[in-house]
Length: 294
Image 1 (cartoon, rainbow, N blue to C red):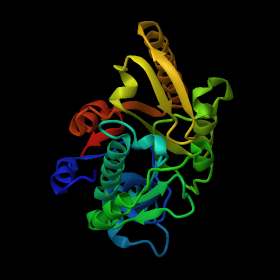
Image 2: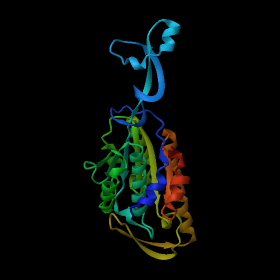
Image 3: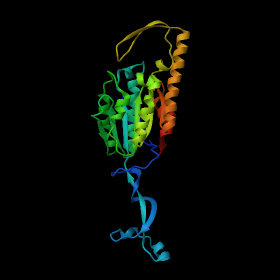
Image 4: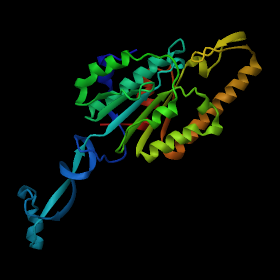
């Protein structure tokens, strides 16, 4: 489901909490490591021929008998990279994970656009063909159109997709996935640690949105069932009784705890996003750790 205008209006007072300065050479609303002409004072330096005389601090000249100019932090745009898992397993649930994933991708893209950041949306099955959006909210119609055409089918190698991310400057990377992939389920392979180390090397602030269906978080089925792997199309017959459900719940909690610990070690933001949770509760309460009020 793609959000409507009312949804975006409610997000207008939020932005992503990047917590670092951008080094991009484009105009925007983020504080840059470069000096410029915004309204936030940075430092003084001696006047050099060719400097704008309007920036001379005449009070300092009166005290020191030397010319100094005021420098300000230059406003730059940040790059927000949003990676969307479009594998078949994301199309599961009475309230489909794909629907919530699309809503979250649209929401975080809007938070970037509304702050005049550049947004790059990636379908993890097609990392070579991202959707680029900039210039503020006017890009929303094309962005939502791109999200609507995403097909949730087949398989996705999340780690391989992240390693294809072509980032060269500090920014924000948002990963939206159910992480139901053997490499992540098998903690011995340290797939999440590898993913996070790569993004840390690329100087990315990482936001991990772990999307799971209510049926995956709280098993209510009982009896003998024939389970079908949505991606591999393999089948498995299981008998669901209280004992097997307890084993599943224990394995699930271990899995969530592992991902949470891995993210905490590198300072990445991690949140489990339940498809049954109201989207506004998710964004304004449970995801407030990666946003801030403007």
